[in-house]
Length: 511
Image 1: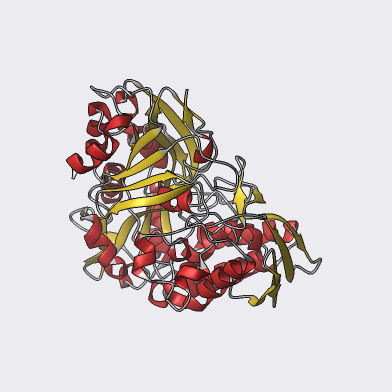
Image 2: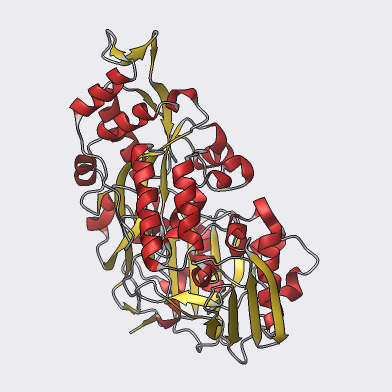
């Protein structure tokens, strides 16, 4: 595998790990996560580097994560928030040369909405009653109720009607050989190895500065660092403990909305009592974990919206006295092994995560040690990534990550709304159900009044504080090592896995 990718990208690297001058305009980048598909209509807010480079939506996000024009050059929103009219950029084409038209927008929205449980993003278009196309350059959306995040939701990549018409959105061929309107087109994809993209000279903002980007999939953190130092790749996503070992490269360290937390499977009886989940939140020392594991590349987490303007979660402190009070109130007492027990049963559960992710494994081990010290019978057991993905619904506890830097709805509705439970095809992997949280989430997405939205998300965070679905741990900074002579990367708050690093890659070039 390494030989194949090294051969395809060899000209981009020098010897001994030193970046070359990049005369051929190529960049090879190593990342840990590989998506199951490059179809943006099947992803859940976390747009991986390849999908981000290949596709564009009607809207985009700027360096401050504000919504700005993308494939739409302008738009108008009716005062009641139920009609959106978009004027498309003239002359925009797909990467196969076909014109991009209003028909493609209509097809995309209807395909995602119609996919239901097959597309987590269908929740963003359930209120759309009609997509009108008065002419090839105009699109009009009709809604049956206001949807505050609509402009944000339309940043999802548009899909080509001429390639997908008559096929299911889940068509695997398109997911592996996508065609978009973005600055780079996918030319080669070797699952489990790499994806090679070349510049799309017909991109509507002009030809990109780089001629080629190779995204190499290297799940193991240590292997990514070795390949970076050996010159097999030019750039790499690094773990905190590796930040000081990327000699010869420049570090791009950005804040993210990406948090780590311990997720509870609410179908498991061990988590039925909210007092137990609350006690475990008081049993974890987030400050210690942020210092010893995250190594300062992050901040202690209070809730799911800490990184944006809607942050209002009080959070939990490390407080063994509150742990004891809550567990005793719930009818538990310490047994001979120092574990909380009730009718002879301890609070026993397996806590797992991706074994290939060293940071998550470290968070798992330290958190489990802290929880056991406070009397919770936790069995820490990292497992292979593929195994975890096949057993989402069966896991008792999991070190999860989530978070987007965009509209708050994109960070919390899919994860915590009971309507989005895993069994219903959603992203609520823990099957969390809380009427107060549901009510607040619905209010937050349906009102256009900024003050009412703020109040709704404050109420939502209070509901999670009172009935926690997670043990919140830490928000992360993301670390990327790049060649010193690469210009263009610009800091902004990124999302889960540090996705979004390539948000302005069309402007990157070597000096």
